[in-house]
Amino acid sequence: MTALRQQMIEEMRRRGLVKGTQGVYLRAVSELAGYYGQSPDKLTREELRQYAVHLREECQQAPETIRVKLQGIKFLFDHTLKREWPLQEPDGSKQKKPAASPLRQRMMEDMRLRYLSEGTQEAYLRAVSELAGYYGKSPDRITSEELRQYFLYLRDERHLSRSTITVKLCGIKYLFEHTLKREWVIYDHIRPQKASKQPIVLSPGEVLAILKQVKKPEYQACLNTIYACGLRISEGANLQVSQIDSARMQLHIQSSKGNKDRRVPLPEQILLQLRQFWLTHRHPRFLFPQRRSGGIALDASQAVSRRSIGAAFQAALKASPVRKAATVHTLRHSWATHLLEAGVHLRLVQAWLGHSSPRTTAQYTHITQQASHSAIEQLNELMAALS
Image (cartoon, rainbow, N blue to C red; front, side, top):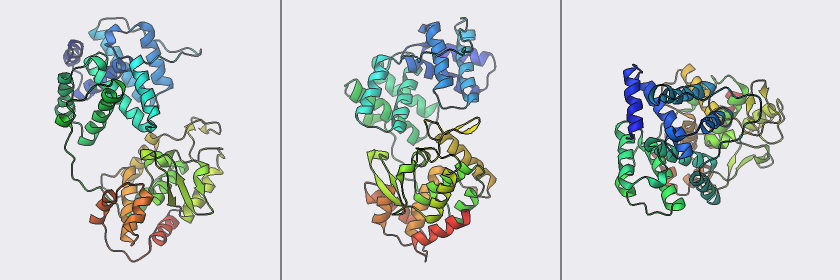
């Protein structure tokens, strides 16, 4: 732990900040340090100002989240460093994008050359930024022992899940192996053992009970499509008009996880719902374009955020009688299970899910129940109830 980080922790404790607030403030400072690859006490006033602009204008986060992050950074400067906080509200003029460090830029280029998905790139960059922020220095100057201590911190102090630590581990490993061209010597010693857990699965009735509680039409159409076609949340959010093949009643999922394409069946009721919703905005590209304060924008350059879809699902789950710890991805697990229950061949479900190995799909065979109707009939009946 760096001296500056320890000093900030002691100052927060002295002022009686609760542990939750302390953790949020420390993460905010770590992200700042990681973005520039150096300790925050070495950043210039201009770098701090531009970082604040970056949070407000480029990060797809709630205004309250950004406000709390800036409060954490301000605490560091006001109470720990005893320095004047240089942040001012940005004026109406065009602000220059803060320059990423050369190492960060090179890692971004390496990931693009390997065609990593945008979500993977974001997760890997965030993992490296948090590591750099924790030690207050560029990650290329971090030793193997410091890496070992960092992963102990993630496990023992932050109590992160195995899957979360694995993602961070993969991001940092990518930096060392592909960008820094350095041997990764501690991977086998710190990688968490894979947990053997069955996915949470909802019954068709539970799916219906949750989706019926989704209020806004764009979220309702998106979540219905995610379930009815077994999509990942990113695939549903970024769905484009050109991906609908109404002649074959299919969705063409392109460049998904693993840079793979696949086609999945499209139930009639979902096609009708998508058409009806598209007529409300007529965006030339996205089926679910980003919403602005005045409503859905025809000129929106981005699709609806995954965060907002997840929030809509959680609100619907809370309003429903279902008490399982479900997420949007649970809809995909449930879809696969319902198809196998309906007697659809495992290999066909594997192809629709986009799994490389049938062993991945076979996990659902342990949680299926016998069903008598065909898969498409069951999906059409359920979608009819949603319409």
